[in-house]
View 1 (cartoon, one colour):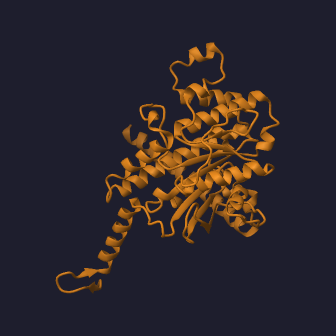
View 2 (cartoon, rainbow, N blue to C red; view 1 turned 60 degrees about the vertical axis):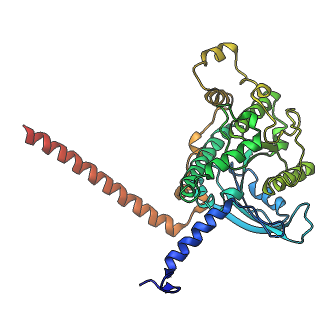
Length: 369
């Protein structure tokens, strides 16, 4: 029996009050905060396995703890001084780290929620020292993120029918309204920063490889309305530049950064929002004959096929969902023995089911005769 609160004419149950509070909170996410109030923002780090996400986070939050591999999903919260503010308030930043490249993508649904979608920034870290994995990792992550955003918008639309329009408007404001009529551009509805890590190793590659990676990443960023910053722990200047970029993103642009892109493949790639174009990126580096044979393909397909042909993947299964049960990092003798018994039991059950199906089909054929 639910408890009633209020007088006889305005009695409400606790469930009704909780529902109203949730609806009010959802409606209010589109409202700005007062300058004197502390704000909350959320940052999700995802990307290639062993790409240095944890190191980047520690530099961002100014911690020097020893770096340990992230098993699945890590979370931390910190306060930072507000930029260009006369108040002493310190804003709250929630930081999530998704581990394992594309192996933990389903956990994105835990992080991207109706109550944080307007204050969320995505940072996708791609390992430049392993270019063969870059295309698949970014494709899996961006596809899952876009689907999750779509689901969250559908949920929010029940109480705020303008939410998709608002997010779309903000996305095109980031990249410039001149791109709005370009059907190739489908900007992510929340800010996305693509970080190319291990730049010191990337520098040692041939110019042809660096050219391919840089142009492909620029194309990916352009079509998804993202920005790019290459990074290396070995270069102090890049550390400070990336931190400034992150601060600018989570503060909604209140901290100014350079809007001048850097496309030179001999230098760390830097592409702010809306500062690139298809004309500047150019076509994939293929022969005119290959280009003419690909007239039926979309630009995305052409870039994907060209990139994968240039950087063939040795074992693409590694980029798909991994099975922790066979990962040596999760080894446990007791659990592994129990798992083996269950696998054998499942195998016997499966074979028994297949045998019964065959017998049923045989009996059915005999019965018809």
